[in-house]
Image (cartoon, rainbow, N blue to C red):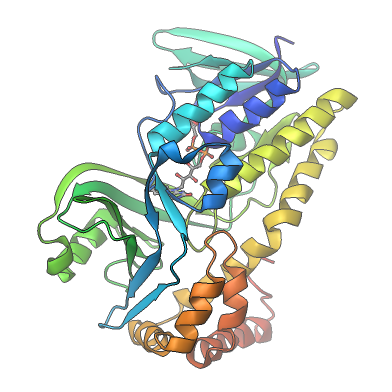
Length: 400
Ligand SMILES: Cc1cc2nc3c(=O)[nH]c(=O)nc-3n(C[C@H](O)[C@H](O)[C@H](O)COP(=O)(O)OP(=O)(O)OC[C@H]3O[C@@H](n4cnc5c(N)ncnc54)[C@H](O)[C@@H]3O)c2cc1C
C-alpha cells in the first residue's frame, strides 16, 4: 500500500484526523478538491470556546465574542438572554481551516490540493482511490480510507452508508451593516422566515455581521432570508451584502459511519448538532475518535468493518444521547405554530427563566438546558403531548 491512511477532504475534520494519525507515525495522504484549505467559506463561524480548545487553536482566529442573545418570535415576542460570560466565539473560518491544514502538514501528512476524488475500490489489503487533478488523473492505495468530504460525501455513497436522520438547507452572507459590535446575537424564529430552523445575525465588527437563515422544507432558504430582511427593516434595512454562501447541513449521526477499511467523519458522518447545525465541535471530536480507532486498527493489522465499529460506539458514548435528545426537542419544535412559539418565548422572558437559560445554556450540550425547560409550563405541555402521540402510535421516539 502507498499509504496507511488516505483522507478525502481537507476540512477541519479531515485535517485533524490526518494530523493525529500522522503524529502517530503513519503515512497519511490528504486529498482536497479545492486549491487551498478554508476556501470557499461555507459557515457562519460561530463556535463554543470549547471548540477552539478541541482544535488546538488560539484566540488569533477569533473575530468577536458573544455574551448575549435576543430571540425574536414570529409574532413580536422577544426573549433576551445573557449572563455576562462568553457563550460563543465568531471565528475567521478560512484561517481556522488553514491553520488545521498547516498543522496536519507539519505532522507529516502529505497534502494534495485541487484533487477531486472520483472513484474508490477495494483491493487486496486496502482501498484504491482515484482522483482528478486539472486534466490529469492520479491514484493511490491506502490500508484505510477516512471520508471527511462533507455533507455530500463521495466516500459515504461509495460505501452505501445509511443517511443521517435529518437535514436543513442554509443560506448565509457576510454583510456590511451599521451595527454596534455589542456581543449580542439575534435569532429569528417563524414559519415564514425560517421554516423548521432559525435566522441569525452575528455581529463580527463595528459595521460587519454574518447573517442567514435555513429551512427544513422545500422552500429556497434565500427566499426565506429576503422575507426575514423585509420583516425587520430596522435591523436589515441598511445592509450591503459582501459575500453569500450556503449549503446542506446533515442533522444527527448516520446510523453507521464505517465500513470495510473505511470510516467517515465530520459532516460526512452527520456529526452535526441537530438544534444549532454546528458541526465544528462534534466534527473535531469525531476526528479524534476516528484517528484513535484508525491507529489501533492499523497497529493490530485489522481494518475490518467489525474492528472499525468501535469508532461508532465511541462517538455514541460521547454525543449519542445528546444528539438523540436534541432530535426529540427538534421534533416538538417542528410541530409548534407561530403562536405557540411566541407564547413560549414570552413565558421564558421572565427573570427566573432568563437566569436558568443564562446559567445552563451551552451550545454544545443543549440537553443541560433542555432538561430544565421540561419544567417550563408551555414548553413542557407541548413536549409531552407530542411524545404521548408518538408512543401511542407505537412509533417510538425519533432518533432512538
Ligand atoms: C451556511 C452554513 C453555516 C454554518 N455555520 C456553522 C457555525 O456557525 N458553527 C459550526 O460549528 N458549524 C457551522 N456550519 C457547519 C460547518 O460548516 C460544518 O459542520 C463543518 O464545515 C464540517 O467540517 P468537515 O471537515 O466535516 O467538512 P467540510 O468543512 O465540509 O470539509 C469537507 C472538505 O472535503 C472536500 N471534498 C468534498 N468532496 C471531495 C472530493 N470528492 N474529493 C476531494 N475533496 C472533497 C471539500 O472541498 C471540503 O474542503 C455551517 C454550515 C453552513 C452550510
